[in-house]
Each structure stands twice: as structure tokens, then as C-alpha cells.
Length: 191
Image (cartoon, rainbow, N blue to C red; front, side, top):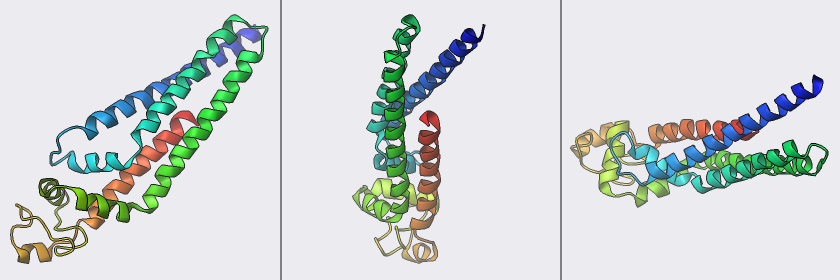
């Protein structure tokens, strides 16, 4: 009866690992779908953020997880051979190291958020900059003059724009909290 409990534990662990791979795959597909959508007041900051995150590596990680789980089938069928268990163990290590590297890259990016966002802000159209200003109730990136604000409902005149803060603070706060959630999720799914 002890062997059945071990086998059930092994199958359960593989099921959880496969569920993590499914979450990585779905997350990668949703990231790609959101990145290619038209920016709105609510989605503009998220779209900009997702362009900074390497979403294709989540797809690669999901493929590694699925390959690892597929090695469970031969190990269940050929119980006398340890080769399949060893191969699966090595792929679990590869997946864990790959996930660790992804998480570290995202963590390092959070340390350079303001510089990355400044570049990203400058590359956006005035319509997207206006959406960001309205979303975070701010004008310009650092302040209303650097870079110059976009005239919209939030920043209708230079006087009103000068009284409002730049978008760097609220936008960086949003990006850091979202990147922290992504970072924690990627580390937690596989490791």
C-alpha cells in the first residue's frame, strides 16, 4: 500500500506542475493579446508595462514544463527503469533555473523602472500620453515641462499643468506593483 501513496504523490506533483505550465501558457497568451489591443484609459499603463516584460519567455517556460510533465508517462509505464525519472528530474531543474533567470531579469528591470519608463513615455503617441495623464491625474513625465505635457482634459492649460505632479511617480508606482506581482507569480508557479 505504501507504493500506491508514493505513486499518488508523484502523480499529484506532476498534476500541479502541469497546472503551473497551463497558467504560464495562458498568461503568455493573455499578455500578447493585451499588448496588441487598442489603448484605453484603463489599459494604456498595462499595455506599456507589458511591452517591457519578456512575454515570449513565459511561453518557452510553459513548453519546458509540458515537456517535463510528458516524461512522467513513460516513468509510470516503465516502472523498473529510472532513466525517465532521472530525465524528468533534470528537466525540473532546467525549468527551475530558467524560471529563476526570468524572475531575476524582471526584478532587475524593477530597479531601472524610471529610466525604462522615460524612454517608453517618449516613444508613445500624444494620444497614449494623454491617456496616461488622465489615468494618473498628472502632467508630463517628470513635470509639465520635461517632456512637455499633452493638452487634454486633465492638463488643459499650462497653469493647471504646472500645479499637477509629473507622471513619473504614480506611473512608476503602478509599474513596480504590477511587476512585483508578475515577478512573484513567475517564481511561485514553477519553483
